[in-house]
Length: 425
Image (spheres, rainbow, N blue to C red):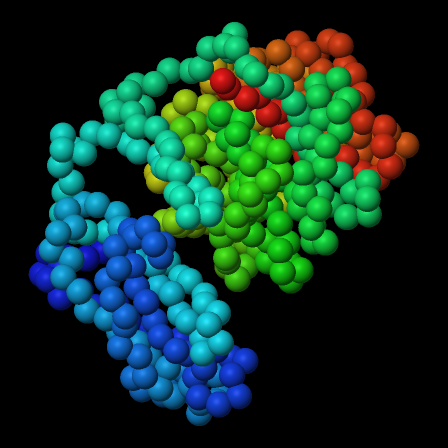
């Protein structure tokens, strides 16, 4: 969670915790603790090596092993240069005696009000390592431009148009891409674990997805390039999480986490930093879909059998139910102009529906039963979804007005969870 640092604490801010290598046969197995500010090792500011070896009898008692008695660490630094109201991240690297390390991140917020006139820019940076060189790229825009940004032009030019989806054609759930007519099939993930629920960044260059990396059912969020290269795990939760969706500017990823016995919506920076919980209900809050040009997110909420669609700000505030219809509505997708929402009407038989963004004018798009996971194309021309043929899930595409339904997949196994990937120049 995020800690708020008051002005009186800034000059002598203490970071503390404990670390132990649970595979070590004697002692704690830890060589040293290094701490960095606002960036990982080699990028963030090196705050120093923490004092290690302080007594943590509570840790030894909890783990039932006296070897971990002296597993505590602490470091004190002057945070006076950090501006009031800013969010900062502490990166903690724990090195074992074998040379391996694990890293953790702690977010802190400096107390006080931030001078918005001074900080009127939003930056997004990517750093790539190649041999001895570092390539840094990204973009910068004013906050005013973001806050007043309108919808993307649906008629803009794209350099590539594809569909990304999940298939177990090879016996394991993996992510594939194909052209809009179902041709040019390409496998993007080949892990021995299950990969599912792809979500495409606004520029079509990145894909976030859910992966059972450790095979323990605690699904994590992974980000890769559109062609399947450079896979990076950005979450490391001890509970299941998944179903990512990107904010319109690529800064954030919203996703669901199974927390306290039910699903809740979380937000994380797209680089994996600054995780924040947004919903705190006893019912299910899941299947988020980020608004196409505002800092808001649509999601599904309710108890089993009574789901409906809601919308909230990116910080979890101003929650509002979208439609007053009693129809069960699930897995939303919003059009690029923000005018329409596609969803799965879940009853005795599931169909794909479309409604206006204010929840009115609900109409059925397809008469094909057992249809799921609708997604509207960035040019507002199509809806892609999966439906069942002879008991097997396949991918279909249909014009947004409900005409021209076409089956795209006819391969072994189940195919589902399709999304469009339209790349900008």
